[in-house]
Image (cartoon, rainbow, N blue to C red; front, side, top):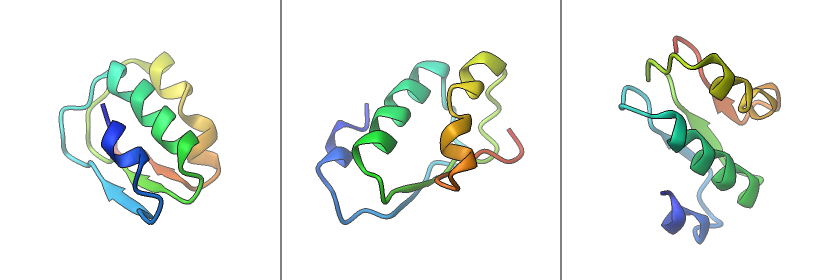
Length: 71
């Protein structure tokens, strides 16, 4: 998942808000954020319930590269 986006180095912002994002998707999203240090992801309102899965993403949120508000 998100493999095609890894090639787009010019990509700066993606918005995946209000989509049914799973915990498995968060692993792919973390890999995407790691591969593109300039990328910012908005992922609001995705209703992910697994707090452990969200904790894995906290470092990106603290860096301002991932917006998880209202999840």
